[in-house]
Image 1 (cartoon, helix red, strand yellow):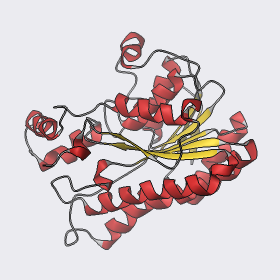
Image 2 (cartoon, rainbow, N blue to C red):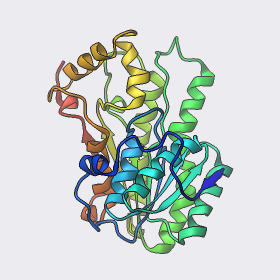
Image 3 (cartoon, rainbow, N blue to C red):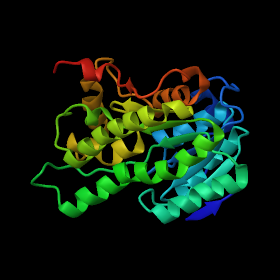
Image 4 (cartoon, helix red, strand yellow):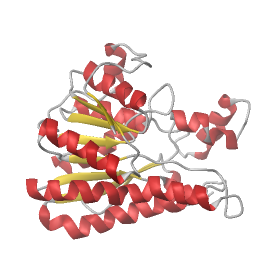
Length: 292
């Protein structure tokens, strides 16, 4: 695990501060005094992922944001967005499926800030294919990153939150964990279903200790990962054609933005959601309710 305390990543901030602020909700103190750890907080390419947008949004509401990603450069880039908004935090590099690296990362947060109030478990990977196309090694790696990582993180943060008297865990699943979306994505879909149930179990066991656990379930969101991988299922050559195909799938007529998911994360992490635990907030433009 590597740690970085500040300074923009080499990708830099492509938007100036005014442009960044235009993407965000109004600044507030709803998360003031809270320390958040966002795993998978970077972006897999230029632009805004759900993790990176969540880091900026949590900072916008006053939280200290510790960005954890497998890529230190990606974590630094997200931290630069936090700092551009006047926020503070750390950039941490760790594989979420590596228990030792995650222990070091959580310890780095505790060494610096002495508390941990919010865990956003955002990291996730996948590989297109059904049962006959999915190698066991790929299945196991996707399971480790998408599900085993939740156990690793929970074992580290739950004792901290229990001792503090409370905390909020927000996992990020996908509508792929609820239904088939038109192409085989077996390992991803199955693990994203497991994410939902994992959070439900945490919520039940730890409700009496003031710890809430909920899941945000994004639909078709326009992110760098979609542009780089999933869109190829529609068109290998023309991204705009792929974007239009994705847009047509959604009753609202468009893919969602990472910011719309990040707003849901911030709500569930805040005291405004103090009586909400063990449930899912679907952010999908109506996709799950669509018949065909």
